[in-house]
Image (cartoon, rainbow, N blue to C red; front, side, top):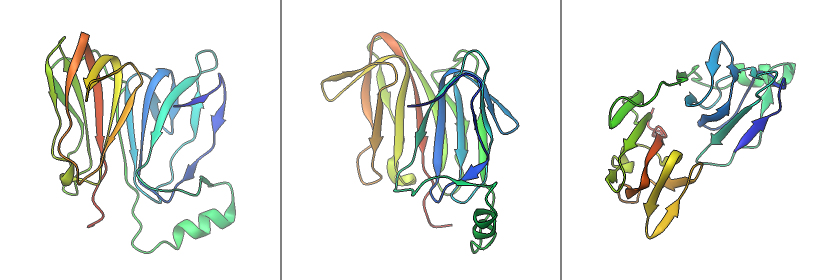
Length: 195
């Protein structure tokens, strides 16, 4: 989980990998978008976004989730990075945002997509002891599941708030059970590379 201190700014940049950012505390902005709990932000590889501006008093806390190695941010204020971005063949800007979200209103809510290449995000609001069933991870290129409230039990282990699980595309769908206080979980699925 990353945090930007109150009033901090991470300038506009891009990465070489697809990524999700999940805001779990504080508030601020991501480019033109307001961000606070719970906000899901997806950017495709080679998509410039930002700046990320943390609120002057609250700061902002978020997960940055990728399913492959990334050598680091390429800041747009550097002319060489801008030129390298323009030179990427068949590059397209791909960014989607959901949130800040109100309290859950359904057992499962679609937040992003699902797109034809499998990219999507869902929020599960699960009562105490109820089963949690994920979509087939083979539809995309892996899934992250983050507990944003309560807890879930998975393979005999209790995963509390801000716990994170990755499900590879060759694994079976996630199957878990909500903890004694229920669970609020955000699932994020990466797009396949068949585009």
